[in-house]
Every structure is written in structure tokens, then in C-alpha cells.
Length: 431
Image (cartoon, rainbow, N blue to C red):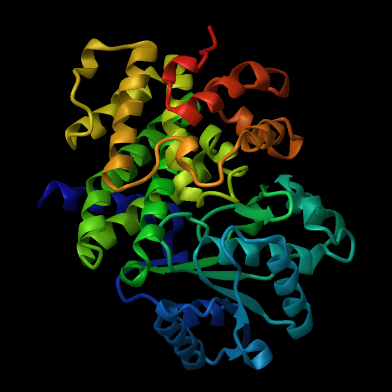
């Protein structure tokens, strides 16, 4: 058995331990959708985009529903969400749920459509009391409202089509206000899809840029959770990070040059699912927080890929053990050429950050904010303001060197300026 096969086996074991029989993942599993939906009733509202590459997937899902006696609520498929799940798509999907009154929801798509369905489900159940989605941004507010009003959400079957976000497995819903150019977050166990399906080979027809975005988002999930993990969860977070990050580092360049290779697609699917597991075990922090303020100029995965090296240098004194594990992975694949055993503290962080940047460069990703078309100092101001917003404070608290709003100017501003130019020397560490 090759080292790649061993990594895949470790990933499958982790995912089975995580989701059990509530998740159908692997190859040729789309037909499980109908079986899952039939557990919850006779009608399903199907939400999906109509991209050409998604049509065969959607057809298989619809055939599966029919085979298991589940009818299409409203007699047609509801259009999914645009990238980054704009709030207007959430309200539109909410209206369809209220109009057609399905027994369950089937979200077919990437993270944006699945996140929009999660949020729409919340509004359809709770909107008579609090009709604005902004009321539910934060942690645990949906569960609190459901208990207060004695109602429940509809079951969701999430059919993932893009390796990256982990939206089909997690308690997160990322929603964007396009006018403000700001993404916000619902974090709540109540919105975790009851069932999930992901056929990894579906991703072969994805555009390559979307594939790469998802891969770097998956690294971010594993990495940020590992950096900020508690002592009690360290062993599990370490196992997740080792498996997930190595599978992605080993296969990202390969998928760029051989996008139809099925083994590579399976590896990235498993790895990014492991990233989804990571954000159930812990929470993302710095890079994800900043990415929320870059939605108008960068895809989520690119924003996360740019920011994680700079946060790595900032966190370095507090995450030495994690950096040695992560650094060994990047070194093993030729992305770091120095002797990591000779380094410690900030210098170790800079070396590991350099490995991350090397991987980004090899696939043509930008490595500084200044390289993003449309970037301006206004994005730095927006990110600073978001970091002070109580609705996003969980990201500050998840950091291995936790910040509060009063510390943002002193420490986050220089980090963002460093990310603009690529100059690590501008980053201030907390003594």
C-alpha cells in the first residue's frame, strides 16, 4: 500500500467515525440522496444552480428522489445561490420554502448554495418572529430562538459538488451582504445538515480555479483549527491536520496539471471533508476572519491562501508544536529547503509561512493582498472594522493568541499591511 493509499484510509476512518451512516461519500454515491430524503417524508424542495457541468449530477439526484417515492415540491428545481451566498438569494429561497411547504430540503451545489439553504431554512422557521437574517449571525442564536418559540428546522440533505468548504458537514452558514462587501457567519449545531452526499468524481467537471480555491480553503480549515486547538482536543486536531493538509499539499500541483485524474480528485475530496470535520472539532480564526472582508475582490479560497502565511508568523511563538508538524509536511514535498530543527519561535513561523507561499506560487495564486485586482486600503479598514464586530468575535477568540477588539489596531493592522506587501518584518508578535 502506498503512502497516499494509507493517508486516504486514515481519512475514510476519520470521516466514518465523524458522521457514521448519515454521510454517503466516495464514488458513485449520488443515488443515496433519494433514500436519505425518503426518511423525512414524501416531498423535497430541491435547490441547485444550472451550470452545464452540474446538470448530470442534478439529473441523478432527481432520478434518485423519484425512485424512492419523493416528489419535487413546487414541481421544479429552485435556483441556488451566487458565489459567497448573497443575502438576497437567502430571502428568495426562504420564500420558496414557505410557498411550497416541503418535508425536507435538498441542496445540490457547492458551499454557497448549501450555506444559503441553511440560512433560508432558519428564516422559514423563525422569520415570523425575527425576519432579518442579521438577527442570527453569531454563535448559538438559532438554537436559542428555536427553543424560545417551540419550532424546529426542516431536515436538509446536502449534496456537495465542490471539494472545499465542508458546508455539507458543518454548523456554519456564511452569508454575504454585497452592498457592504462583508461576509458574516451563523454558527449553530441546529443547522448541520441531517444527511450529506458527496461523490468525489463529480468534481472532475469543476473549473480548475474553483478546485484550487477549495483545496486552499481545506488547508485553512485544518490549519486554523490545529493552531487554535485546546489541549483536550489536541490529539484529534493533530490527526485531522496531518491527514488533511498532507493530502492537499501532495495533490494540489497534481490536480492543476491533471485535472481529470480520479485518484487525485478522490484525495482532495477526502482531504477537504477532513477540513469540514476540523471545523466541527474547533473553529477557524484569523485568515477566515480577514477573508470575509475581501469578498468583492477574491474568492474565499484565495483570500484564505493569501492570509494564512501572515497569521502563521503572528501566531508562531504560541504554536511551535503545531508548526513542526505542519512544516514537516511542506518540507517533505519540497516546499521548504531549510532545516526546521534548527529554527524556533518567529523564525520557524517564517519558514513554514514560506512553504505555504511556495505552494501558492506553484499553482499561480497571488501571495499578497496587493496582487489582488481592485485591492485598496479600504479593504484593510473593512477588515479592521469586521474584527471589532461582536458578531465575528468568535474568530478572535479562536486564535491561539486571542485578541479582543481593543487589540485589533495594535496587532491586526500591521499584519494586514504586511500581507499587502509581503513583508513579514512588519508583523508584531505578542510578547
